[in-house]
Length: 353
Picture 1 (cartoon, rainbow, N blue to C red):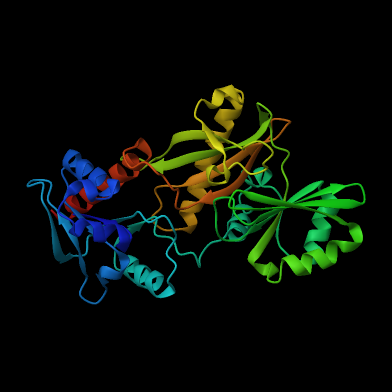
Picture 2 (cartoon, rainbow, N blue to C red):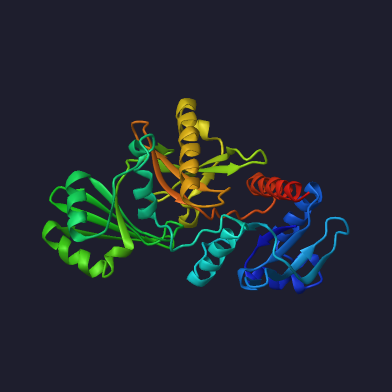
């Protein structure tokens, strides 16, 4: 049996008898269970009892096709499918202890263990990856001032969080600066002089340690709009990393961020945007970064990595998403990590036999 960890909100819908009311992810995994001949246990993290290794959830039998509420033995292989990292330190510690006892929790990363800055610091240790990283610092006034002296544009981003929210872009314009703050598809422009920069900083960022300041990349454009890429490295049933998908995200008119949540649009035929050699370089780098993160975080098999290509054709790695949000359930990017989980499960059953 394989565990599928979902939010309690999604699990509540299972109590409704009408399957059409169930979350598409539950129906998707039930179908995959039939194909792979494995039973499933859907549960939320709050349903785990560490002491007796039991879990309160819904068990699906691929033989009978039935789903029933049940207190079951905690599965050895578990796939974390919640759109945010593990936030509770208590829960993260529980998972850590269970891992030490041989339980596998795929993609269950704690938000306390990683941030954009920690990821950057870690990746700088790899010679083959370092040249692709834009310079990044924890935000302080001195660091901001230093970066503005080095680069014509800088980005200030939250260390944690995504969807392109709460980003401030500062661009040098002679002896003045243009600042743009982006939040929930709204952007506010404010022009300030050099002498106003310090006051702007302390007013805008009362807790600067929660942010990074990053070298701005002069992104290449498509039809006049900036674009970047989301690449999906995943582990397949052969326990190898593969690139399952490459997607370009094109910013909406006048925007500097490409996230779909900020009005960006997806382009799937990326060869229209960059040369084939650049696509190959990005894919090779993508696998290197996935393998590097796997050394640091236990039990990874699914990532969303963001890349940019600048106006000169140079590839840059921007950031990692450990919980790539996929609005559609029945897609290859959900099937491949599940098949990997199935291969791990079948190995454990062979070892027992």
